[in-house]
Image 1 (cartoon, rainbow, N blue to C red):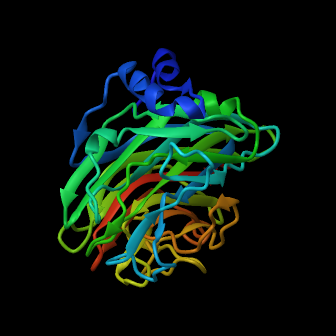
Image 2: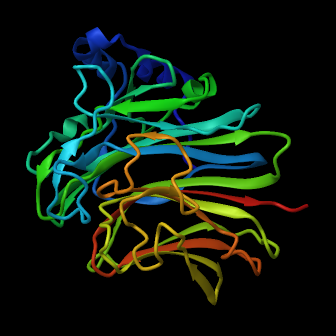
Amino acid sequence: MRNSAVLAVRRSVLCALSCAALPAALPVASASAPRPGEATRVPFAARYEAVQHGGVVRAANSSAKGAKGTESVNDGASIAYVDVDSDPNTYNSSRAELAVPAGARVSWARLYWGGNLRVGEQKPPEDNGRVLIAEPGGAYKALLADTLIGHRTADGADAFQASADVTELVRSSRSGQWTVAQVNVAMGRSAVGGWGGWTLVAAYEKASEPLRRIGVWDGFETVGPRSGELRVPLDSHRYGKATNGSLGVIAYDGDRGTSGDYLAVETRRSKSVRLSDSANSADDVMNSSITEFGTGRTARTPDGVNTLGYDSDVFDLRGALRDGADRVHVRSGSRKDTVWLGALFFQADVRG
């Protein structure tokens, strides 16, 4: 398992900034920690694993929107920035609530962000590993990626994903909506479309909740007609019948209305179940949406249904685990779209 950054690095990359001083302060923050390297492909690997009473939650939103209303398909759409704050120094910003249960303790948290650098404009990749984050009621802080950044130019896009540990910040924050700004995404129009967004994933402990196996896996991989299928072995433990569980996915450039992309859970050597719900069909599961069990469920600003190429969805695994399992492996593929996968997060009840 990959380890989170040590305390000294966390303190160096999370520094409070006043809104008026943002342009001058950001270069100072970037000089305080080494810039992580980039790779065109980052294989999926475990980032966090635990067995504890508690669960995993996430907040997510898009950093891009349709320039002329909500287009049904991302390809060829005119892309503009989402910008919900009142700060003239930010060109994109969006908010979402992280629903940590009352009385719970956050044991781990990480922010993922990414997008397309090439749309009508070309953004410099030097800014891929830098965003601003503000806890509920707090001021912006500069956050730098602390691990290898996925960055690949292919299929008409210039796509990336970066991430950083934010455990201490989330653990000490109050409830409410988080704001993430300055995600390095491009606006304009291109054949493959523009996209971008962020997801904050947090594991928590709470004694009154069931004992659960929790895990987060991340990487930067493509699936599509030329890339083939991606298979990620998440878990090799046995689960009894009617086990409760959920699976979350972060993905980029899934077009709404373009069929052929799927997310499946293999529970035995000969059994695989394609995931779907009321908001995500089994044959168009990467459809530009931020949902949980088929609904919005969490507060977001803005809260558009079509997130134009950014997916952060949580699926109910009770159907897949109805007959029990001796493994939980995830398979993802696409017959038409090229889709970029960034992270998977999983929880399932453990019965003693």
